[in-house]
Amino acid sequence: MSFREVSESSLLYISVIIGIILIASFAVYYLFVCYKHAVKLGVDKGVIKNIIKSSVSFAVIPSMAIVVGLVSLAAVIGIPYSWFRLSVIGSVAYELMASNMALDALGTDVATADGYAFGLMMWAMCLGMTVGIVFNVFFVKKIHLGTLSIGKGDTKWGALSQTVFMTTLITVLVVPMLVSDLPTLMTFITSGVIAIIITAISKKFSLNWLSSFTLAFSLIGAMASSVLWVGLF
Amino acid sequence: MKNTSEYYEKMHRIGRILTTASVIIFVGIPLVVCMAYDIMPRLSDLLLAAGGLMAIFIPISIAETVAETPVMGSSYYLTCITGNVLNLKLPAALNALKIADVEQGTEEADSLIGIAVAVSSLVTMIIITLGVLMITPLKPLLGSESVSTSVNYVLPALFGCIVLSMLSKDVGGGVKIEGRLKAAVIPFVLCLIACFIIPDYYSAVQGFIMIICIPIIYFTTKKLYKKGKIIVTLPSEAEEKKEM
Image (tube, rainbow over all chains, first blue to last red; front, side, top):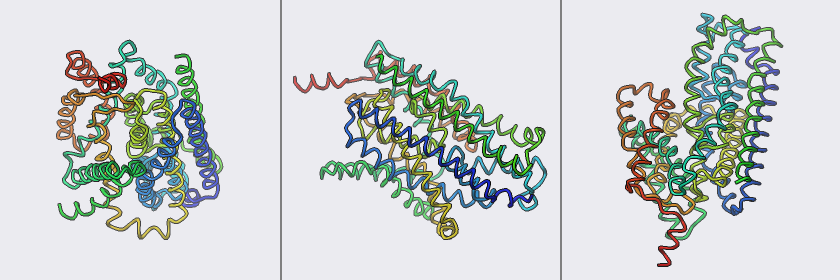
């Protein structure tokens, strides 16, 4: 069979649709469990609603960025498997790297590859990341509960110690944005400035609903500004 | 205390079951397709194609798990299943904590992060599905110069806003902390050095950088807290101050 006959086959489409529906149903179930528990703990339903609205509004733009990646990935490995991989665990850079390594292993390229090469690509993409998440089954609970037990005897230290991980994560992620290039730095600053302006407006005019959309508006505004910064620098 | 433990036990049990089921789905699709078309790869080809990837990505994902789990809590299972941790799930989690104004490391925070992760995962799946359905008409728009430029700047556009919450004294749940960023100075400098030495590999090894930075920030924070250079004010103390 040819590469395209397998990569665009109805069997693959059906498998992918079933896979996505199952993973989506896991997310719906998880949402339901967390919602129920948050309500049980006394979290205001209005606050939960705001979190849902805010998560929806801000997730749209990064998801559209993934769709842009989908177009380039689909050109290499076809639509159905790109659709599946990017809807779940994968990323464009990783999938392209894995598909290239599979083709290199066979000494072929996309133009001349056959169905066997596609099979190898699927496994290469699947194994590299999937084996990593198997680790979660054995260690996430230990890591999570271990960090929660820090500072149990001292309430103040307990509260402070929980911020350590967030501080580390943000420090490590943000530093390259400050030093990589000017458009990245300016986009970063623009996002912060928009957030400050929105927070000030929502406080001054008591527009509580607006603060739920701070992240979404900052993201859209800063991404749009990146085109200007790239043009300028 | 008993209920807290019960809640976390339950969420980790759910997370493990969902991860196991997802792994079966991830592996099941290539298995079904390769068996149906008789294109199952030979082990030697598979080792050649995936061996290098696994050697790189397994240690990276282990390092990221150690660094990201304390922040994402029991939602880390779903976070990994649905991917896009840094550009979607982490910002969604931080955003949820900010909106709800809850303290990190509490059950409230854990369940609200779960809501944000699940919702953002579903949104991504819906948007990508719409993208697949409209891939032909969308191609000219998605391939335009301005769109391809702006999608390269998703992370700074997200984190510019998010970093503001880190600068605030208010860490949620009425807890105020002064001076906690002093502990991040050394890791900040270390990250700067890493950026200059290995600019092209920084993102690939950031999981390991996090693992190095966690104990540095942890022990510096503890030392500064004990010396009184980092001051924590609990909600009850803030109330007392107001009354006085």
